[in-house]
Amino acid sequence: MPGDAAWIALGALALCTELVAVRLPHRVAPLGRWIAPLARTAAGRALLLAGWAFIGLHLFARAGIAHL
Amino acid sequence: MRPPAEHDAPGDPSGARRHRGAPRDAAVAAFVLAWSWWATNRIPFSLEAYAVVALPVAVCAAGALVAALRLPQVPSARGGAPGRGKPTGTSALWLVLLACSLALEGWALAAGGRSRRWPTLSDAVDDLLRWHGVRVLLYLAWLAVGLLIIRATSRHRSGVAEA
Image (cartoon, rainbow over all chains, first blue to last red; front, side, top):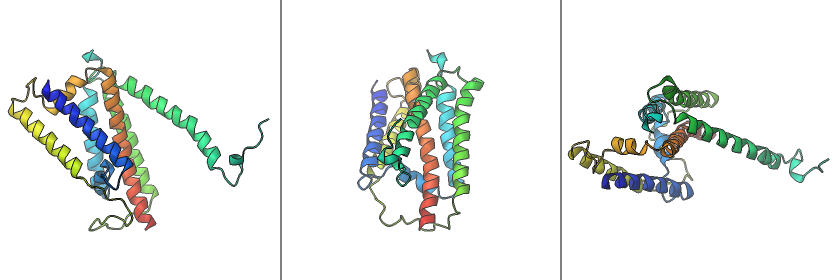
């Protein structure tokens, strides 16, 4: 499906961008630099944790052996 | 009896520490991989399925809390100017990827939301989550983001404390 392929390509590009950013941080900003401003405040850190927990629940609490 | 190596000298313990760290790192990596394999093979919506998400969240929250308590409180960083000497690469690539993702999601929603040809991100991920290997990879990536959150918290605080 073209849509699936497009999402996979975007995911692969994001991964490549992060790998390049880790090696060449003066050329490309790594993802951590987007997180850092949020991590400055307690509310930002709570928001980051909540968003991360939501993604975990959304992806992994409903996907398991029933799919096999 | 093993002859004392140069890096075992009390004055230079870094080599010995590195040697001791390698098996520990391998053990941690093996444990995380085994945990991820087990964690992504639970019955959906079961107590275990929630626990395998809740446990890393609790560990991450505790890690962020410890990082916050151990390091000095940050003075107000109004303005948020980056520290001198820090690399400042462009975020343009990320913005392009974000714009492409939003456009694709919008296109998928405009196509009806449940289109097989143009799935939304959630539907595309659902398709991929059928494979256990993909679930393990995504779970590992999710754990890595949690680690990134802890590190971002501690790095910011220690960076300001050093200034």
